[in-house]
Image 1 (cartoon, one colour):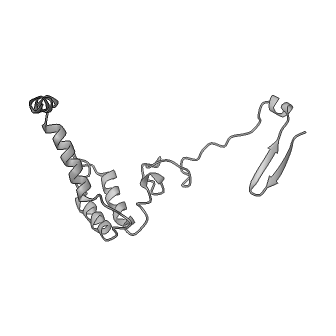
Image 2 (image 1 turned 180 degrees about the vertical axis):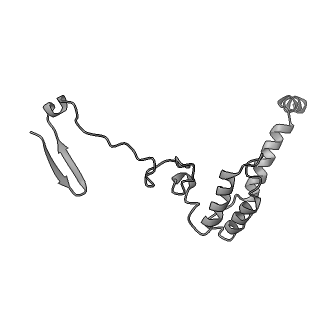
Image 3 (image 1 turned 135 degrees about the vertical axis):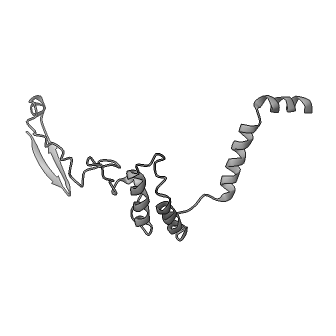
Amino acid sequence: MSYCRQEGKDKIIFVTKEDHATPSNAELIADDPNDPYEDHGLVLPNGEINWNCPCLGGMASGPCGEQFKAAFSCFHYSQEEVKGSDCLDQFRAMQECMQKYPDLYPQEDEEEVSSKDKEGTELETEPPEASAADDQKSS
């Protein structure tokens, strides 16, 4: 015997083997591509930016949200040969805003960046054969 019960916000449905044996007659409603509450990713079907996309990490809201939107929109809609090259002023404004809120928008420590650069440079400028030859000379 099938039955339902409500537990708080949840609805629990118990069914029998016979209920599962018959094909479902549930009708699925087609997704509305223009539904503003539907998850669509970064770009909506109409080509506009989905500012509610979790992929933006909340950057569109907060103290520098307007500057972020201006810079990101400019880049998204840019028709320049080097995409976004016409957006330097917007990105500069966003960066200046973010520098006013270092707790919300932390930057990499300069020491971290310089040590990463040094490691990368050493690997690129010194071929493996040279370091192996140096090791043999010193032994």
